[in-house]
Structure formats: C-alpha cells, structure tokens
Image (cartoon, rainbow, N blue to C red; front, side):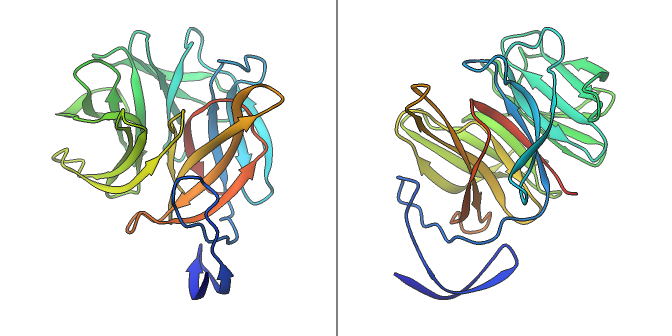
Length: 263
C-alpha cells in the first residue's frame, strides 16, 4: 500500500510504504522524529540499578542524564515539565507531589494530595493537573504552591496525563485489553475519545506531547531478560488518532511516565 503524499512531523514525504508494525491494527508512516529531549521515568521494578528519571535525546537517540527519584518514592508513576522544574508523583504512598531541580534532581518543594498519589501529572504555565490514584479517581487542578483550585470526578482508569497548552489528554486502560487516549476539557472534566489502542498482555503507562503530536511507549518482549523491556516511541495525531511514526529507543525497563523538553 502506498501513500501519494503526506506530511509527517513537518516534512513532506512522498510515496512512503505503509507498514503495520505495532501488532494492533494501526498504520505507521515512518518519518523523521522531532528534535528535542524527553524525560522518561524508568520504574525500579525489574531494573533497580537502571531506574530513575532519564533525559533522552530523540534526534540523537541517546540518553544524556539520569536523575534519582525523591527519597521514599518507591513507585513513581507521573511526571510533568513546566519549563523550569520537573514535577513527579507516585502511587501507593502519601500523596506527595515533588518539584525537582532538572539539573540535580534535588527537591525544590512538595505538597500533599488528598489521595495516595498521582497516576498522571500535567503542567502548563503556573498550573498543574493531577489524576489521583485513590478509588475516587479525581482530576485535581493546583497552582505551584500546591493550593487546590478545582477538582472533577474521573470515570476511566487513567495511567497518564498531558497538556498541549489548551486541553488535557489522558491515557486510560479499559481493563479489557485496550488503552484509550481521550481529549479532556480541563474546566469541566468532560472527555472525548481520540484513539483506541489494543494490547496483548501489558498496557501502556506513559503519555507525552511534543508540541505537534501525542506520544506513548510501546513495549515488546526481550528474550534476554524474559520481560517486556524493549521500548519504542510512538507518535499519534491528536486529531485523528492515527499513528504517524515509531522509533525504537535505547532505554530498557518499565517506562511509567514521560515529559517533553524541547532543546
């Protein structure tokens, strides 16, 4: 199958072969990845010596830095970047949301959520949004001092959250072998499905925004470790839900969150 012409990540690409490589019925058009850097949360499970917050350069396909998790955060699940600080939270703890120095990983500030932590964080300007990990599944809006500004009840099981500067998007698990990406009105909590992505035995946990497209992580089986440790970035059109590119990355382990940082 051939496409006569399509623009992928800002480049005009002619007569590209379309191949389904995700095993889930999605069309992938290969193109050049955007130039920028991505913070990735590699969970301690399975790779405790390699876990941390990794700074990965997409264009060079190389990891440049690794930051430690805040003390006592054993299951980090949510990450956001506001342009000067990283914000991180985990689940199963006391609801801490920590602001980190991106150069050293030291904690600049922290506040407590009325939940056991966050499964997703998003930042834009001086605002933060967090999806609580508790049974109530609420979407919270905070300022950078940790003062709660708003909250809404969340219906799906959300595994990550991101902002494009106007709207929110969340990654959810249906519990029936499928992830969904949904566009969310941050003022009302109303949401609309953008993409449906089936999976075999392990769902996706990370969602990002690079200024043009949504991103998630596709994991595959690694015969050397006996785990789903091999990872690839997948770019998704936020309007159509179509996959526009995929790139293997040299990061092993369980990636639970991501945050885009342009150069």
